[in-house]
Each structure stands twice: as structure tokens, then as C-alpha cells.
Image (cartoon, rainbow, N blue to C red; front, side, top):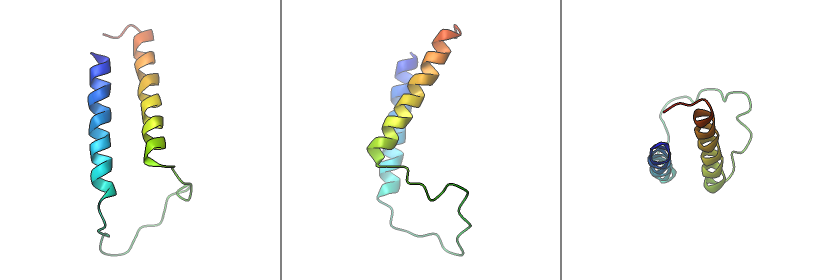
Length: 69
């Protein structure tokens, strides 16, 4: 069951990232200051998804180790 939830969540994230990636609109008005560390590159979308996948795997492992249903 958890694998199905993780798969659905990952698929939803991919769809939302794909939708955001195609947007060329810029928000109107002044831009807020960038938070600390914002200058660091997150990597390619594939690298981001791999990182998200490993985070989901870690959460799944943690849930499995504490006996959660």
C-alpha cells in the first residue's frame, strides 16, 4: 500500500513539475529577496526526482521500522 501511495505521489510531483517547467510567465510586481542558499543549483529535473525518490524510500523505511501500518 505504501508503495502505491509513494508511486502516486511521485507521479503527481512529476506532472506538477512538468506543468511548471513549461510556464514562461513572470509574476508581476517586485521580486522578493532570495532566501539564504538560493544561489545553489538544485540540478536537473532528473536529479531532483532521484533525490525525491530517495527521500520517499527513506520515509518508507522509517515507517516500516516503527511498525506503522
